Length: 139
Image 1 (cartoon, rainbow, N blue to C red):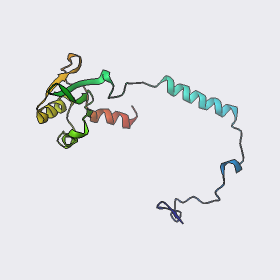
Image 2: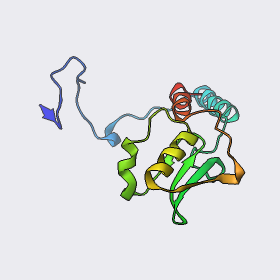
Image 3: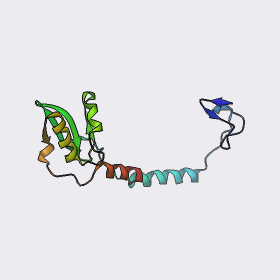
Image 4: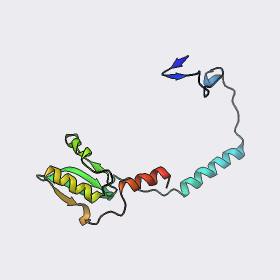
């Protein structure tokens, strides 16, 4: 039998009878287990290091403007926001570029000027690649 390309003929196939949820026997979870789970949740929330997302206004590095109109936003992480009309530029932007490099590449390609956020002309201390690696590593 096959459903959406998933076959039950493989070694990882589940075997058994399918039952509606309401027919399954209920089992009370011991209070000690509930307390353990609550403690794990509290510990993870207490230790959570909340950071604003890459595309928050506080992390804006620069904007590229053409004829006074904003055509691109570049964040300190290197994340770029472009309108669909300029989607072709995504293939021209180097994957390992820093935010300043990306701003320069876009401004050059569109004949625009770079407007730095909060007079921030410093190159960011990390790149999008490093930021993504931290997310994937769970840091």
